[in-house]
Length: 201
Image 1 (cartoon, helix red, strand yellow):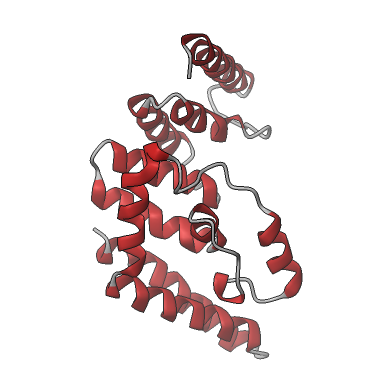
Image 2 (tube, one colour):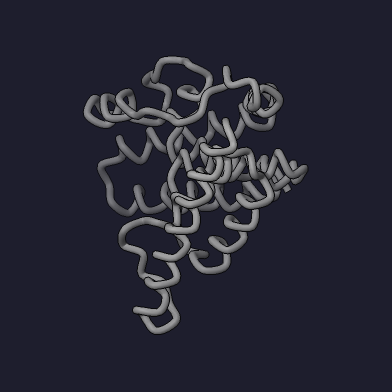
């Protein structure tokens, strides 16, 4: 990017941060952010390869939106940022969280087509996933080291075991007609997700 292009991105960052500050003021010291500005800034920092700026924003996000479930691409950005600043254990957890939130994300990142195994178990959801456009690609030279690291992570035995078990539970939840049994399966899934920290911590 040219200096002018970088400066334009920094102007956008300033504007978004100003909008968030106004939102906090409007709500008496708390954020509402129904417009979703909180998701925008990290990607802008990554666009200009300012990993420190992105990391500071993710720290701010975690502090002010601790219960936000996020979405796949945002978690990918978080994993990428953590990787670039050398926090590999935390990056592993976010990479797995990105897969859980939308298993199509990594296939899209690597340029692979979305399949039935991507965690979508009906045609409508699968078609929706297939139309998603990811703003990041493993072919981008600046992400090459990250792409190799993610590929190794997703090929590791620990992840393969986790992902197979997770998808199995997801399928059983879909197929189980009994509400009480479905709730038990949801608890099993919740426990699996909580256990991600111990696997990748």
